[in-house]
Image (cartoon, rainbow, N blue to C red):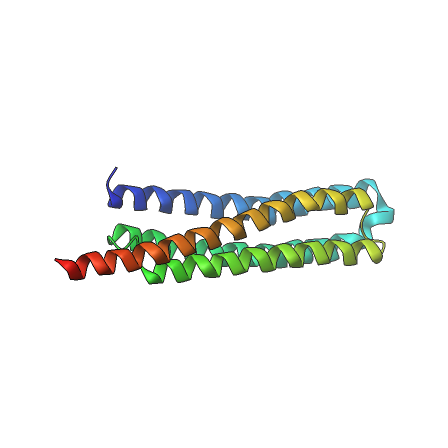
Length: 159
């Protein structure tokens, strides 16, 4: 598979993830929240705080998709091992770690405000784990790409 085809596939996947996220956050989550508020009116006051919290938590994910798009463009332009890609992946790492921390703290705050259940807060740890996994993987890739960029520069200068 050549780099242009790889970049094209990465862009298709990024668009697919973005569309799936929009469907989840703009259609499924609000509909599910409204059904819970309708079936259990004693929890209706939790609908908007939770919805706003989840929308705010989704914003860094879309920022990471924009950065991933830039990485895919660089790959398509034969700049896979560049300092720019390393910096973009470092930013993705920071976004994932920050969003994971925000998501965890937000869940705890909603729990203390009696707008959540301890089980929901415990289950949110799964989401936090995956966010931290993305942060660590992005940081590792950033480090490796930085080292590869230095090697590539040395190789280009040798000839």
